[in-house]
Length: 198
Image 1: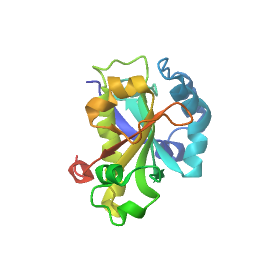
Image 2 (image 1 turned 45 degrees about the vertical axis):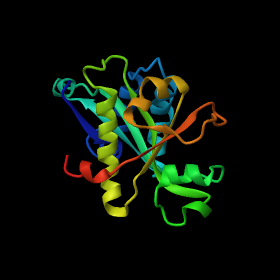
Image 3 (image 1 turned 90 degrees about the horizontal axis):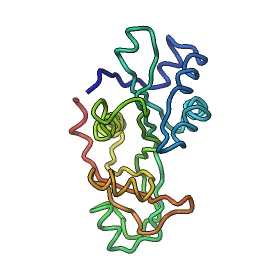
Image 4 (image 1 turned 60 degrees about the vertical axis):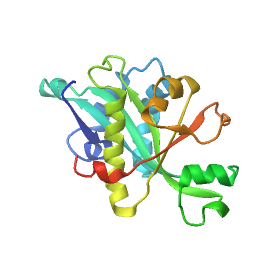
C-alpha cells in the first residue's frame, strides 16, 4: 500500500495551499472509467465545499508531497441525505431499516451519502484499494455518527460497479429499478462505532 494521508478539502482551502494550486492538482486527476469523477473534482468540488452541503476528502500521496508535489491518489465526498422509501413495501422497509421507530408509515429516512468515490488512474488497486478507500469513508462518517447517530449509508452507482465491487462490500439495491439517471441506489447498514478509534 502506498503512503498516503486523508485530508478534508476544507482544511486545505483554509490553510497552506492556494485555491489555484489545488485546482492545478485537480486537473491532473484522471479516472477514465468514471469521467464524472474528473468533472466533479475540476468543476464542482470547491463550490460544493463552500456550500457546506457535504464534505470532500482527498487522499494525498505522502511520498510526492515530501518532494513538494501535491498529488491526489483518490477522493470521496460524504453528506447527509433524506432517502425516499415511500415506494418500498413494508417487508422491504423492515429489511432496510430493521426496528426503526415508525418505519411502516415513513416516506423518507435520514442517511449518510457517499456522493463521489474514485481513485486516479495513475495509482493501482494494490497501492490503494477500493476497499481501503471505503474504509476511509466509513471512518470519516463515523465522526458524525458518534455525535448524531445513524447507521444507514447510501450511494448511487452503475450496474457494473454494483456487480464488480459494491455487492462484495455488503451493499444492497434499495430498489430493483434504475433511477432517472440510470443508476441504482445502494444501501448498507453499518455500526460506525468500530471506526471511531481507528
